[in-house]
Amino acid sequence: MPIARPIQPGDASPEVKAVFDDIMATRKTDWINDFWKVLAHHPPTLKRTWESLKQVMAPGALDPLTKEMIYLAVSVTNGCEYCIASHTAAARAKGMTEPMLGELIGVIGMANETNALVTAYQVEVDERFRKVP
Image (cartoon, rainbow, N blue to C red; front, top):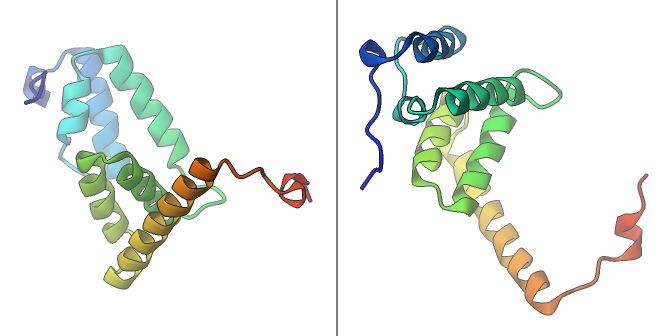
């Protein structure tokens, strides 16, 4: 059961409304998802999280689809149902196909398996992997 109810845009303080407006303008939408509505209970966290996310997900060396797929992979590994749903939808909107999703899930599963094995065996890192090219 949620510990806080979403704050609807019509009930938002001016500070929260400004962040909601920026989210909608940046994303070119008229909708605010519940994640942001719940963060609105603490406006400094809402603003900081939005500003950080906007910066990290902005155009850069990685294309937008790659960024969404990385976000999805981490969300799967962390078991965040909300983030899995949100970033699957975002990745699909940016061009992720079903075969790409299937392959991504395979990589996620394999990485988690081999990470667990290397951690359990406490395998030392090979020296050649430590060298910066």
